[in-house]
Image (cartoon, rainbow over all chains, first blue to last red; front, side, top):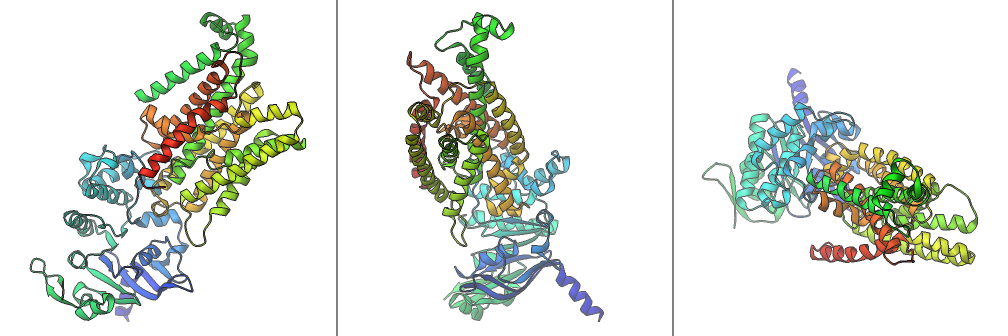
Length: 268
Length: 325
């Protein structure tokens, strides 16, 4: 009995999708998907184009209302939560956000404090501290006063991540945070998220394209195919030749990465 | 900071020039006398003609400029301004309609009503089921609504008796002729209230400016927040139209021009710069319209049209280069 209760408790601490259906009735993108993403983990959502990866992430971020089912955060339906209270619990970085013209990194990051500031709340020391920490975490402190438009793609993405880090939410959802970045910057972004995950206990859930990088930087993978969830769990359990065949129609071998020992996909 | 000072000095210079120049020229001495003692020929010109005219221009320009900058930021598009999207034309139409039908309702109410109807039409017609409306669609639909409103206004003009029609025509172009102190009080009072309301929503605007998804992630209820901001901006534009007519291009130009003059990057600075620049442009346009050709008094809207149309063309070509059109 005690064991059961404990399981129930650990299940509750995190994001839970409960028989979630997304999209329109005539054209469902995801149907009856259930998923448990515990706190403290780094999760990557993977799958071929058009399988509903982003749709699933958007639903978990409350940007999309499910046609059926629920998304629970620590056991509570996210659609029943107060918007601002939820924003203090989870932060969202959409795919390729567009910065207002001329905005500086510091001004952008400051806006991450929005859920903590009421109409008449002045800028407090804790806000300044959160921003400074976020900038330091992405190693952008020296670029604080630079306009976003003058930065490189990798730096720009780090500035956006600083914005959601400054939001101070323990859970972070990112939609393709490495798209359009070269390999060095992809690793840079994922390593930075991993560091926040290890050091600050940040729960990170992101949609990724690169399977090998996802395997290297994740505790848990969610693999979607055209007909819904293929597998979820630890990288070695998810990235099997059979699952890759089902999800992508890809014939591949999976070997241990000689550097990290994580699964490495070699297409045949 | 230096940019803000530049704008303030330009405003001061333009205001003084607008007070001194005209059919009757006032020397600085006469102006000073008029302002300080309230006596002499200066006092008469300032008290009954140019004083209210210039102050109305300042107020109307400021509310239109602020309105434009709010819309542009909200829609994240430099073409999204109430004068491009047909809102000011809608406001103008209701006022002309009231004149033609002999209704005597307060002008700001009429303008607000017309602007609101135009905005609702734009929102309804550009809506697509299940999709977010791209700003450009709304802008183009708004352009169409604006043309319809202008055409209806022109039609209503033909129904008016000659003298009245001429006056209404001037007003429709955007004119500051024959403004009195009640106009000044009206635009400044309503303008100050609405500006305060807009400033109170700036933090939400700052989040919305990052895109709807991020704004929602930052804890905003995006729909209501957008509605409240768009409503405030709409009323600001209506307040301007009510005293100066649907002067074209002020709302479109002031935001970008103000940012250029002041170098302001943060949102509050950009909004204040837009208001200041709107005031500056309208005062200068009105001065140019009445002093450029001796003996001829043009409506201010002719001048803002001459200034604004090239700006619009330049802006369009830039948007095309960026691939946004």
